[in-house]
Image 1 (cartoon, rainbow, N blue to C red):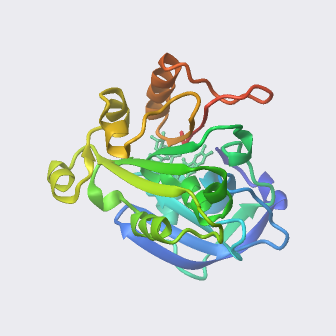
Image 2: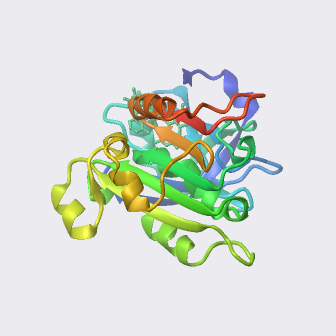
Length: 265
Ligand SMILES: Cc1cc2nc3c(=O)[nH]c(=O)nc-3n(C[C@H](O)[C@H](O)[C@H](O)COP(=O)(O)OP(=O)(O)OC[C@H]3O[C@@H](n4cnc5c(N)ncnc54)[C@H](O)[C@@H]3O)c2cc1C
């Protein structure tokens, strides 16, 4: 996270094509894609905007698939946040800087073995999974895929219609692609939980008390499960503790493991 002008020679200026506002403080936007720009689903870009005449850079997961001809990002608006206060008013035609190099190790190629792919997210941490699931690879690599998305209110379930559509019609031409289950959990919306069939509570609590695996209809085991976690650092810390107690370990450079993580702050 930096506020400087030095990075502009490492970046290209792109044009915002489209803005979708999900709620007052959640938006997705697409931009032109720099020529030759390459990334793997699950990676992030560093984006630059001018705030008070100063360049501000922030990391953003790509939600677009590598094959798409534009880039797409999904963002929260943090009250008083330097970058997202400017982003909040983004309109098509606006200019935004995209660093030429993309980053991140939360990519599927780092897993070995396993047949169930669990994707845990809080809030905007769903972003990398949208890219991964718009891409064909995960659908042939795993047998079952489960997205677990925790939000405060049901209105924050961005992208769920698309995920449900992908579950019905996977983006791959293969004889028996993976199944996809989408489990939403709301922590401050009891009515939506009971009316719309979401789980209620924090996803870490739901994992600990068994209700998450019950809803998925499968158990998380070191042999079968490969897991990504993205978003709130407190969720990731709690998940690490729970998974460690279940004999699961992070994937390291040369050591296979069960899980990969990405903290958003
Ligand atoms: C690898 C990486 C990938 C990221 N990808 C995304 C992404 O795809 N979408 C996205 O919205 N953000 C993402 N972030 C966070 C993003 O870089 C900014 O921190 C965020 O947009 C706020 O910037 P700001 O300058 O407005 O607020 P700042 O002044 O930087 O305020 C930061 C504070 O806002 C809160 N915060 C930051 N990000 C979030 C968030 N996503 N959800 C809830 N609270 C948050 C935290 O309390 C944090 O301390 C990512 C961060 C990292 C490190």
